[in-house]
Amino acid sequence: MARTSKVNKYAILWLNHSGMNPDDIATELSIDLKQVASVLEKNINVTSENSVKTKTEPVSVSKDLMIRHTASKKTNSVAIMTKEASELNDAKKNTSAHPNIQKHIFRPNG
Image (tube, rainbow, N blue to C red; front, side, top):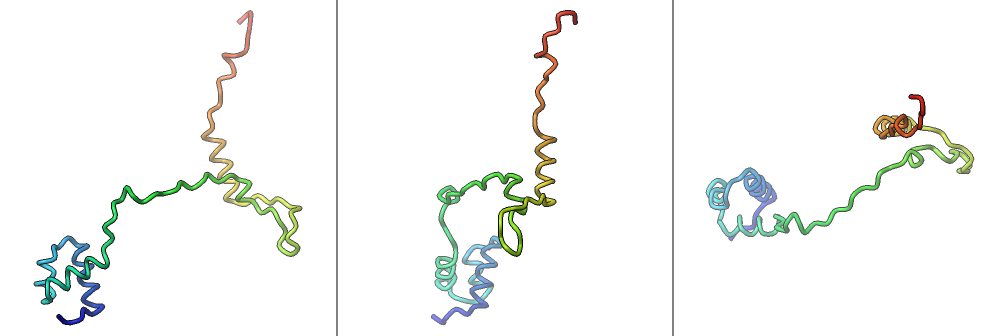
């Protein structure tokens, strides 16, 4: 059995990704079925999607998006609002639920 070149490995992986089965890949590239199987075995990740644990990214607050230290001395004596922090504050202001205050005000003559 000859050694599989990088070009053949790439072609095997691409054809497998395209949906071809290993028998068709072997005939298409004129190589042995064992070579195709070994390349697919080494390079295809067969772990299930559910076993991968993901972590949600924390919601950023505008304080994290602001410039809070000077460039030269690195002192924490400034707070400059950036464009991203301003956009985040505007989005939060528009999406926050405003309670209906009028129904909680007692009006005896109204």
